Amino acid sequence: MKAGAKDASNCTSFINFLARISDVSIGTLRTILLVKGNRKIAAFLGFFEVLIYLIVLSNVVGNLNKPILIVAYCLGYASGNLVGGKIEERLSLGRVSAVIMLKGSYEEIVKVLRNEGFGVTIFKGMGLDGESYMLNVILERRQIQKLNKVVYKLNPHAFITITDVRSSAGGHFVPKKK
Image (cartoon, rainbow, N blue to C red; front, side, top):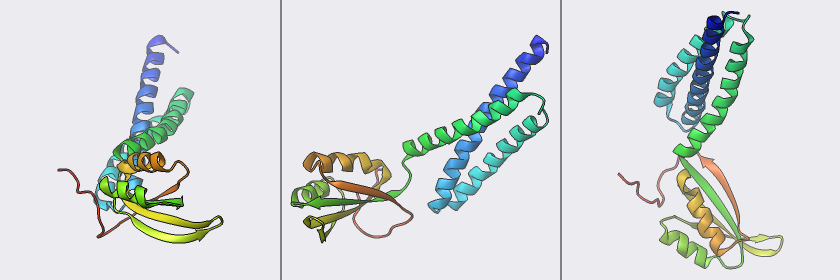
């Protein structure tokens, strides 16, 4: 292979790699938006995801005799999953439900959480070691770290689970800043 052809193949591989990162990252976001009920935005992103995918795929399939293109394609896919996950983390899309399990006193944590703008519902229960309390908090995903910090500062033995919320209505939430 001549130097010019090798350089062109390396450049094409790099472009395919970056394009694959883009389309897989878009696909990750599209899937998350679709699950959260944002169908119109998901459809818009889906158009560009498939457009990029088809262009890159046709380039690779048309040049199967160049293994570097196949490797770049596969590495782009793998990297796209990582990048898409990081983007979703940064965007912190949607709401989550936090369940905080406490043994003993709960009043101080509830007071501080409410002062921080969180809505808290309290359930009294019986666990293996006796009386316990379950606090239920619906919050924006970007507030998880703040919630954990407040709870663990006051009760380092608290048990917290976080689950995604597809939709919610009513309740007490901190107003969104405009």
